Length: 254
Length: 289
Ligand code: SF4
Image (cartoon, rainbow over all chains, first blue to last red; front, side, top):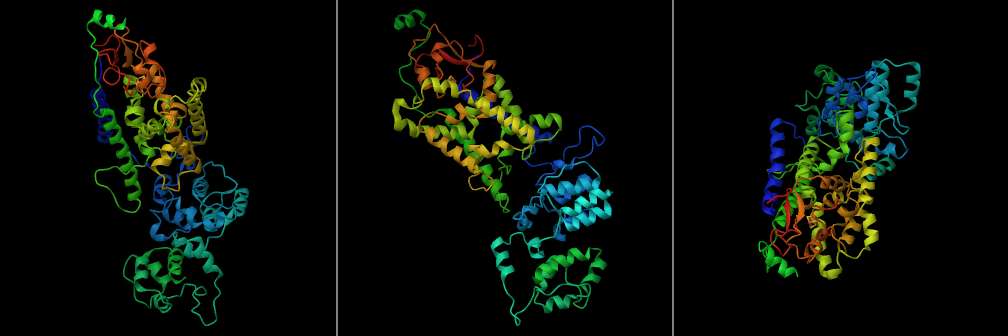
């Protein structure tokens, strides 16, 4: 049987687009990650998902589903904006913790892998440059069953979060951060950095400090309550974590 | 002597003129080149909330069959793919293998946008160097270099298996070409792209000949593909036009069937394209008519 160019061209199209069509119908054709990590193949943990397979593109929502870790614990551990707990991708950590990287301390996808492994009591090895935010260490101390030695080694790799502005707005450039941190505040200037939200702080006080009502509502994802209400009371009423909300609102002040 | 032979056999006909119209392969290649370009553009647009209708927004890795090959070991042992590779790469890998069993590396010559890119550059090279184009590397050096792509293949597979990361991306000129705006492209990939561009002005498909690990995999299928380039010795006039037309410098005129691992099934050497005798160099099954 002889084949001419035209026939070969048709066959190539049929194979490629037919194959894609067929696998699309069966649901096998996927051009994006299914976000399901690999499982341990053998040993004590065979069949369980392996945290070492968590990728940068996995969201905290994906991880929470696969490893059955409360989203709130993941979000708080890494100081993520509460509004973005579910959609936050591990790879975003690298940009918000960029200032630490300069000191050779990395908080990124590897940190999430390590946190998840310890939280679930699964085996994992740690690279020398991987660190965990101090909140993550606190959560692990509280919720994971760790030995004394593990707690000690965790404390050695605990780092403090960068300031809240970096956390809530990863687009802030290093240059801007540097400029802001070296800015001296004159006694008569509006000293926002010294204003910190406390348990008794009300929404009215936020408005008085120059925060716009629309920005507050964006964070609350609903209308602002009575200005006289304290932020802590509001958080308790809504069943959301005060510290997370405080951090987001503090970002507006800074 | 050869004229007498033609008259004796009386079946093959000497074709006096070759068609000047562009070959169908050119259109197919152009189609896939722009399809891949649109998909990568769409992927970039999707990151800023825009999209081109009816075009996939998969990543370049998602539509590369070599990703499937690089993932084979991890898929077999753990059941997942290496980073950035998805099911679609696996599907395309299987399609490419099926095509290769039947027809050899047609993916290289008809579909691969990077092969097309090199061919487009070679048109400039042909103008610059005339008949010397594609014959500037000493034959001895060339024949050794032809096996280099198996070394690249071994290294890529070994490093991917041991790291479970897509190591090849850092040296992949195809990725650099289609993602040149991305900060994910390593400097090494840009350097290799630059070298490939320069070499394409001197020889046909330098990346495919000397370095492409995927071409190395598909080339193995030439040993047992069902459709082969076959030459009818009875009607061959030994004019060597088939040899001259071959971008991969294969001496078709000295073989009954081309088994060379470098043949890309472009059909340039066939009676349909460059051979002046009809039914003499054909892409056929054994004894095929
Ligand atoms: S010209 Fe013929 S021998 Fe050379 S690569 Fe194309 S099909 Fe193969």
